[in-house]
Figure 1: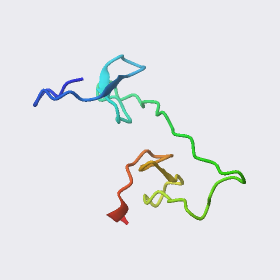
Figure 2: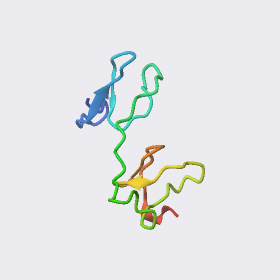
Figure 3: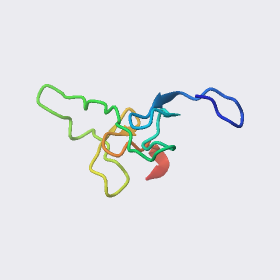
Figure 4: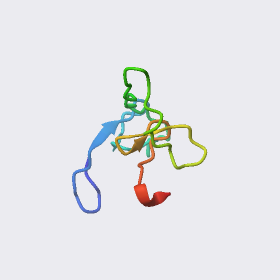
Length: 84
């Protein structure tokens, strides 16, 4: 996928509904409006389950996700440490 303004290559994926190419991190298709399926990352488990002490909760306030690799597992928002 190419930016129409600066011609820079943008990583993309295809919309399952209309087949249009959209940016890789899009949550909705910019052509037909369909919600795009997200590839969710698995939450790392320890032997006895999750490490509840070191988890980082999504700072959204309404989301129940946790931050894994800089991204919320539920809403997909990028985590910025100084955002709190």
